[in-house]
Length: 276
Image (tube, rainbow, N blue to C red; front, side, top):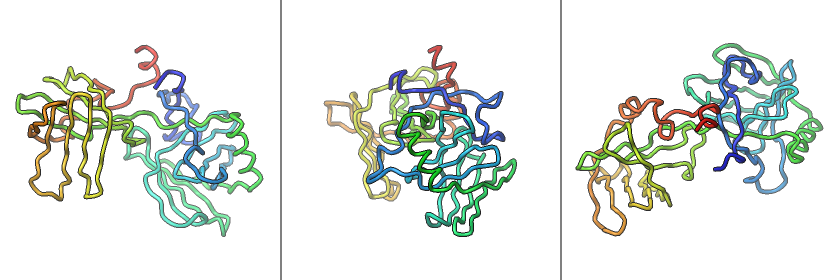
């Protein structure tokens, strides 16, 4: 990802949920989003709600929700953590990008003209946007008058493993915007000095989670837990010989790494990104 693909975005999901430009909110690098790229058929704003300040919370017809502050030209995606109901009557929840314990729930009954959102700090009623206003918002996004910015790369550990010689094998993922393309592999004799191995493929099967993490230096195979005592292995490239790995406590490894290495755990701020 190049610098032109990234923008500085605040983390809006705080007490100032609908005011992400407020003081004291850290900026993080995040990708420019194309919210209609994965949608088949005509693009639409499926749901949109406004508070009394004019800030808008909207959905692009998929699971992608964004906050657009009044007067802003940038809409910020929120991590959705749950959904139940239909397109007109539903409850959906979101979590903070950096802290899943911090959450909010949107409750909607459009047939009765009711919408509200509740966070751990407060609750507010929302106005349902008319079809004309949703169409105007859609057109502004399609015309690039409003820029949609995705989720920051908040890293977490998916696999924490150890070779017989004591070297670590770590697989890190993007916790807020999980995708195979965001997985990264690291190795080394010390958690304080891990080097990255370039990954080339990920294959995950429908047997409960058996996964091949393929890199230029070899492949980690992690079997589904439903296969009992099947071993997790590392097969160096070109050898064909699988070496059994020891599974480590991911939480303990994550705690030891902490935010010292944001390639693996935590999130890099915009200031850290531009300095690096």
